Length: 417
Ligand SMILES: Cc1cc2nc3c(=O)[nH]c(=O)nc-3n(C[C@H](O)[C@H](O)[C@H](O)COP(=O)(O)OP(=O)(O)OC[C@H]3O[C@@H](n4cnc5c(N)ncnc54)[C@H](O)[C@@H]3O)c2cc1C
Image (cartoon, rainbow, N blue to C red; front, side, top):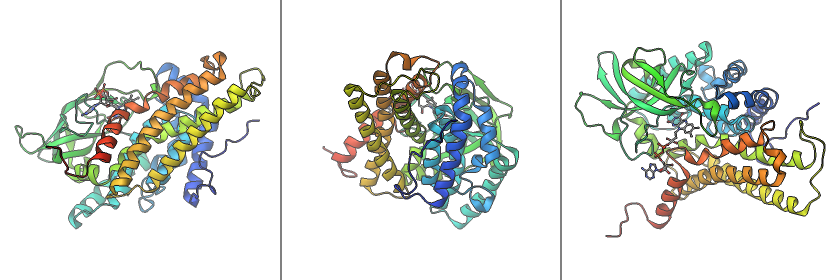
């Protein structure tokens, strides 16, 4: 009989709320009982975790960030992050794609509810978002989040090249997205694009739109192969929009609000971290079980008595606890208009999770030894998945270092010339 895994964030030690306790427990149980059993197949075949999404739907988790008043579970930012970390522990690809799906609700729900809108914008948005929420809760719709285009736009320094030209009753969308996780599996692509009012308008970042393009619209196609190092179950292929007509109710945020939100609610970009927080815990868990001779599928040989291994485990534990503490603090203080110090901490937390996840995974392989990296065990998958975290725009590890260095040395608007 398998024993139930203990929480990444213990309810009493970390002061979790009742809802946080319930949802993290639900995610952990699903992860341990079901997702962990399927993860190897998704990884090996680089296929989408369809069965896990059925479980998300059946358990209500697909509506985790839909407000309770609209029939969802009403999780706030922190509750979502803690819950998603438990999923990442058992299947990195499922947690990463879950982030793309949930962001459509988190950004149109909790984030917008904590943001100033005009009464007209608020009223219009509340009507439109109900359409999206009904699709998710009643029809089991899955949303993707394709932003990346291979240029500077996803890093936030240029307008998106994908455009939405205003036409009667909606928009005509044109462009190409790369690394579109859930491609070919999502029902809606929550794309970031630049709204144009005339064909020859210059694209402006302030006109960024977040809209849900129905996957079955004429002009939507998925292309390219998908055979990456890690996070293989995300199926992040290229997405082409060619004169795709998208109706008015496709908006996931009122026009122009994404640009403001990216500046005033920057913690929203941290939602890529829980998958990797979970993987860091998983690499640590593996090592403890393995060295104690308790890893299923391996002979019951204990290796814990060697001092070098004890020191390596101590280093892993210290790194894990540092990562958890900084991440927990950053997600606890997330909200609109953060102080400068809070924003620097968010970048530091993002960097720490993405880098330390990989550091713990590589220490785990070195410490457990040759047999631990065989494909019959899951550590090598954790290791490969963990390498992808620092590549995620807009807050890649490199960009976090850039922003942190500049942010610490320069006050807002300060220059040297
Ligand atoms: C498994 C996986 C799943 C993904 N899923 C999605 C998804 O669902 N949706 C989505 O939109 N994207 C997704 N991405 C894409 C990801 O967010 C990045 O856009 C992608 O990794 C960038 O690859 P690139 O080769 O174009 O990098 P580049 O854009 O060439 O960047 C390479 C590096 O250069 C640096 N850099 C980039 N731009 C700047 C700049 N302006 N200033 C300074 N430095 C810069 C960054 O450190 C970056 O890591 C996914 C990526 C992976 C690995």
